[in-house]
Image 1: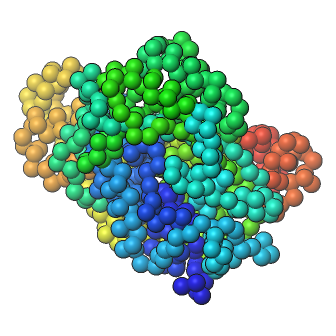
Image 2: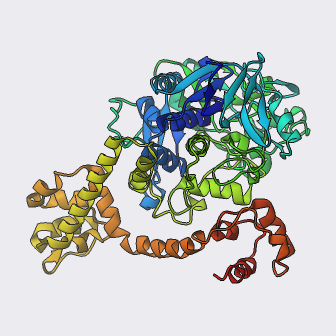
Length: 621
């Protein structure tokens, strides 16, 4: 196996690495997946959950493309919730609580059943680079593995340092050694690197908790899941619980601040703004006398508990004393303390929109190496890097998803054009076309595109085409079928909306905010035969299309305008410094970013609208 030249070498088998390997292999590339430990493939290093606000949309997009994260999450879920259901469908976000051990095992099983993937356990110490083109890797044992492309998905392992109070030691994750050598080589090649940090809370013995003092958080009765495939859902679900810190907890935590690596300056890297440590929260929000904690089980058959919201790097004795003051935790036993981890990353402005580096040909970065945080953000980058590594090797056109096509497109576009100095996390507010990028229609947006690339399977395409046809049939029925006042007025009165005085088309009723197809179906038995032919998902999507038709059309018009700029191609080697009419900063930023299109140029930080006007005039529009 060491004598062959692989099409794609993937370094790291976390969420990004696994999806990268799957994408390239399913498209026909020979793949070598290298990991430091075969027993920790697809490890859930932090909380045992997938999805959530905006992250759930990303997982559905990965699944629609043919990736595995959604399938694995559905197969290993112990609880499902659709977040934001009280709001509009643009922000509905699926989330699962998962069995940590089952998750990793299922991922490894699916990887091993995927043709074209070889595995090797070792650390990668350096890259083989000649004439600014990558040609393979060298492992810690000195083995050279040749490859036409390489995808680096190193997570938190590059020069990783774990902090617990005043103690610090090398490591990429608790109990695992850090990776050395790659950062130093990349810097020698001309790359810029930086430091970031993330953290994790203590793990607790669930047998020692008093759940009667906590609020129960049950899963949804209607389990949707992530995958568009028909994955069997669990019959029962495990509850989570909610409890709160108090002033007494905060006072104990403050006694450890003088030993906090974050406050003493031992940690130089910036942590995630939207997932701060507990000490950071009580320091930044001193006016709040309590903070919410989510008590999350780690699986079906384990007593281990993840205390979401209590991430910390304070001394272990301070952690323990403080957490015993939390309601329900008075007699808790700690499996292991929380810790912070500091690691190297490479500012993503050094990449192209394909996630290929600008300095070294056929070298791709994906995941936390690019400054992101979260399993889902890492997984989608891995998938896109795997796709584009395969396409680069085959000398085919790359795949670049637009901001109007997917949250994945928003994420990558933000990273490459704006960069990040703190761990980047996806939110629905980052997407300007949220009503188009809903979690329910990811398959309609992406599956056909993926199928044409050779990634998504025929059965997925068939299912999407059937779904599109069903939605259109329902819409046509609503346009043509009428309903009498006596059939629906009782139901309308019960919902608090005005009753009918004459016969109207069904579409007029469905357009009302208070009315849905389920209500009409239950109130009017003669319609049961028609609606029962279609799935709940098909009915729901048809309904969304009717209710939000005006908003969808308006966003579509905006997309068309923006695509005019996206369709104006730019030469990456264009000499911007020769155009004196551009602002000095604009010339500098454009020369560094080397945008592919005028649309991309318009989103680069520091490039003004007048700079774009100058370019449009220069290019003769």
